[in-house]
Figure 1 (tube, rainbow, N blue to C red):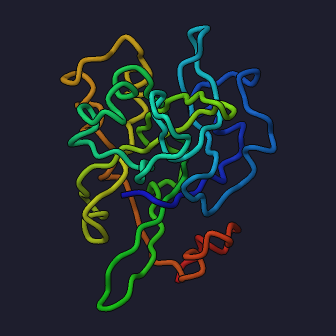
Figure 2 (figure 1 turned 30 degrees about the vertical axis):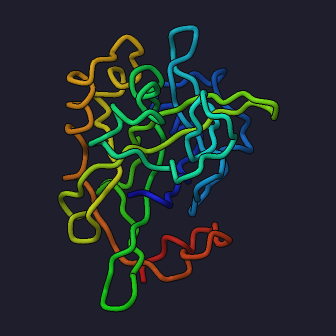
Figure 3 (figure 1 turned 180 degrees about the vertical axis):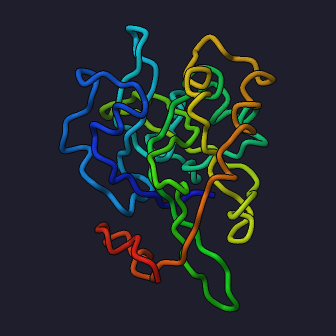
Amino acid sequence: MCGRFSLHTPEADIRAAFGVEPSMSVPADQLQPRYNITPSQDIAVVRSSSGGGRELAMARWGLVPGWSQQARPKFSTINARMESVAEKPTYRAAFRRRRCLIPADGFYEWQLAGDHKIPHYIQLQDESVFAFAGLWDHWQGEQPGFDSCAIITLPASGVMATIHSRMPAILAAADYNAWLDRGLADKSEIMPLLEHNLSGELQAYAVSNYVNSPKHTGARCIEPR
């Protein structure tokens, strides 16, 4: 699974990595360094814009499908399992037409060690920004409408397999265009993008229990244990 991550890469570098025009950016205060992003918070997503390019937007982490009668789901929707994402009613429409990139530069997972869990910080070996494979949707009801999103997860491999059984799908940069292509809707064409992931390029190290509290959001969260 993926329940915490970081994004402290400067906005200019995020725009460059994902090909987003400066004019298509969210307000600067929305992209301040964040070292402990948690579910239900608004997070940055990159998606296709109506003009044909890419836009940065903010979306609540925890997908609420547009057809939902409630503004909050009855169960956790922060993650969508690769094995069922194309069929589950909550995700299948977004999987076909509303895929997005979710920028991150690291994420956390807890490794079971006896009767306790040790948090680990996982990042690319070059420590650069990357993209989780994401889905988004728009909800509109009696309350003000909002966008929301989910991160797709898959069976762990590489270094992640020693920490947890699941991991987020991290897309290869060469697959960004295809992932964002609204015209690509066939499961047989989309799934290979998830399988062609960067799991072999990750590194991990243990961090302190300081990160366990959602109230802790500073750089201390990623300091080695």
